[in-house]
Amino acid sequence: MGTSKQEELVFLGTGAAWGLPELNCPCAICRDMRAKGERRRRTALLLRGEFSLLIDCGPDILTQLEESRTQRIDAVLVTHEHGDHYIGLDELFVFKRIMPRDAFQAIPTYMTDQTWRIIKQRFGYLETMGVIKVHPVCPGCWFTCGPYRILPFDTDHGDFARGSVGYLINWRGPKPFSLVYTSDFMGIPEIHSDLRNPDYLVIQSFWLNEPLQNRPHHMSFQNAIGFIEKFSPRNETFIVHMGDADKVPNDPANNMLKKYDPRDPMRPPGASEPYPVPLNHSQWQKVVSKIMSDRGLPYLVRVPYDGLAVPL
Image (cartoon, rainbow, N blue to C red; front, side, top):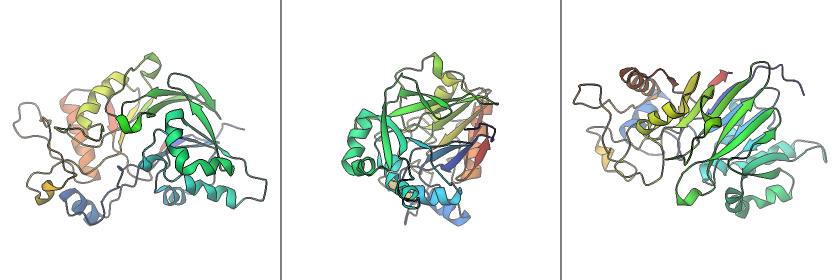
């Protein structure tokens, strides 16, 4: 297998568990995105070159693969056992269905034992029927997947995702790179030396401001800043898994169950008013860039949109 083709990171989706805008939701964020024709499907990534590595496989995966014109999947990494990260595995059956009989080889699929125990209850038949071949991974133990060396690491995503991991992915081709993907988390037990100074960091940012109560165990951009500093990426940071749970001032929809009060919203230096809650893609980028600049932090943070392909 050659390695001459340009590697790229494709953001198949950048949204949270219900996608954005949410069905029938009248909140300020969903209204604004709907008016602008913006959409964030469930977060999934694709590393694509001579080898196609899918990272998470949610309910939007069929549309995402069609829109990205993906011809094949060579391997899959699953970060944890929440439906928005694995429920689309059944859609991979199509790659077998369109092949001649006995020509298809099961897609290597990597996840922790704890994650597979949950997923197997629903999708064990995919392995029995030769659609996927599950390879258990262990946090802290390197493994090889095609042209990549990969290190899973523990992430804290609450009691209902005990198998949750992030991945460090190293590619040693003509233009070597390293990429860290945290997936969903609210903490990381240990950021050991292998995880520091990746070329690229993809990190969750479900809220702008840390909520008073973090019931779903997600990461806010407010807290993600500290993790960006700890990881200290060399090139770029990308934030994903954005939701609509921040309360927008004066929005009548703030009484919805999904809306969270901020603990201590971020403010510009010397200002009494907090940074505005972003309603759409361009506002997310503007607010994030302003926060990083105001804090004098040297890290380039980009807000990707669904379908963005970044050459690596």
